[in-house]
Amino acid sequence: MRHLRIFVTVADELHFSRAADQLGMAQPPLSQAVRRLENDLGVDLFDRSHRQVRLTAAGIAILDDARELLTREERLRTLARRAGDGALGTLRAGVPPDTTVAMLAALLSACAEHSPGLSVDLQEITTEEQLRLLASGGLDVGLVHQPVDATELHLGPEVVADLGVVLPRNSPLARIPEVAIADLSGHDLVLFPRAQAPGWYDCILDTCRAEGFVPGRVRHASNPEFLLALVHTGHGIAFDQGPIARKEPRVLWRPLAERPLSQRTTGAWPSGRSAHPAAAHFAELAARVLARDRTATPRRDDSPHPPAGPPRPWSVVYEERS
Image 1 (cartoon, helix red, strand yellow):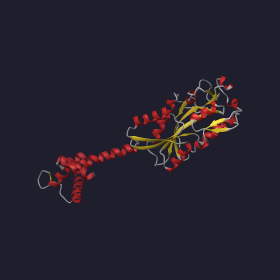
Image 2 (image 1 turned 120 degrees about the horizontal axis):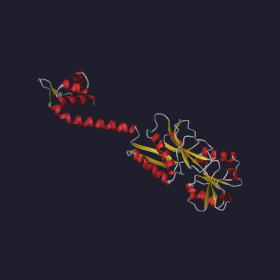
Image 3 (image 1 turned 30 degrees about the vertical axis):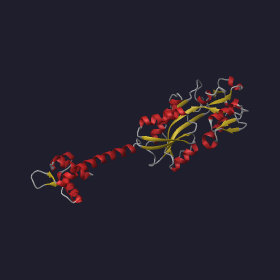
Image 4 (image 1 turned 45 degrees about the horizontal axis):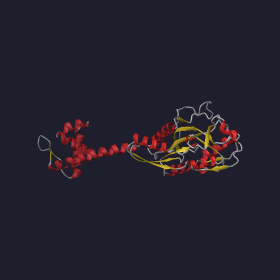
């Protein structure tokens, strides 16, 4: 391709010295490059027998094709750069099952706006399954619920959501503006199955025990509707961020005093050279969309016991870790 570029420049100038100046090189190497190209093709491309350089019939015949090849080479380089920057191709991204429709739509819209040439293949996958697929190469990036083993992963900005408690509407605790976890003693607890996010599941139970609440029984519900139904029928209480529970008139949501439970969601992608170039950008976009979806205000601290006051449902902690 370098020799073709030199050939086209000489063909345009019909002067070896001027062509060398235009290309920023000395004339002898330019002349040698033209000779090598002629030897490779087995024909003379320039008639040097006269004082003025002229194209031979072979030179005239290949000139247009040479220009086209150079144009296609530039297009190939541009495509390679864009793909290397993560602007092209397909990004396989996992999101947890509790992701809302509004959040999914906003995330896809944000990706299309920032990288219109990138196809995002969103898959609904639990945190545990995402970690397995990220390790095996079956997924490029995921949104996972902390804590997770991030030994072989890069983690993007965290989005922190304070959880409240979902109660039956007729519960005596419904009259309290803020419920302490210790006040939940004697109740069963409805949780997502541990296999979905073992670290987060264990964290919830550990926090409950530390705060004085040991559930009489732990029931499991993968579907939010089933979880709310169990709470409504008196089969336990549940922890939730608020928006889903507030849409169900048969249950009530109350914030937890001292905000002891915070769900932490972050983008995760494999470390090393095999990482998809768009993974980090997707994690950043997802954090912004998650925070905006919950009308959050970004914050820098990550205190497990924020000051008392009105609930702050979501916040973002920008911390790049590996």
